[in-house]
Image (cartoon, rainbow, N blue to C red):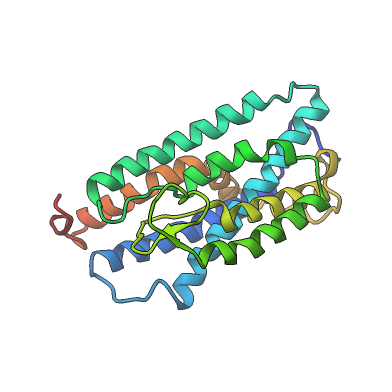
Length: 252
């Protein structure tokens, strides 16, 4: 059994793995962007590393939303929409910071609706869904199916980018529309309710939380938002200081 105030080490560790995969992908991405390395990041191994990081990270957002909801419910804490609205808005604001930075540095590939924008909106939209199981699984599959329909359309305006409708010439450094990514959130909510009902593990397994590597992954998972915010500027800075890249190529 588990205290309602504790955390599940495996969730934080998995999030830590997602962070490592993300940093690795962005490290290679930066080398490619600055013409240091010639690798196709849109296919092959690097594509799957980047996609795996995103899928795992977004899936765990859904799982974590159910855990937070269950913990508050069991402890008697007030479960209000305002809490989810504030949290979602806070993360969305960080997304806007990335929008501004990309607009200044990469005006042709502005981050309009990246992963932080998406997670912020998803947290708000998920509020009425958090106690459902099968409905979220089926809903997630429907979102995946409809995303193929959405992706087949091109529009001549940007107002529905957040849904997945893109202009023909659309380019962005980071793009996570609701179709299909909200489907991943819904499947994560389903999994959280199935495997952690009432904030308890449904299935017990060996406790690896004392393992040093797992502990490091846990720490990274707990600080995932902070790591995401700082890792890309830090990577670029370190590559510049090491003399590997030249920032003059992007006008800095």
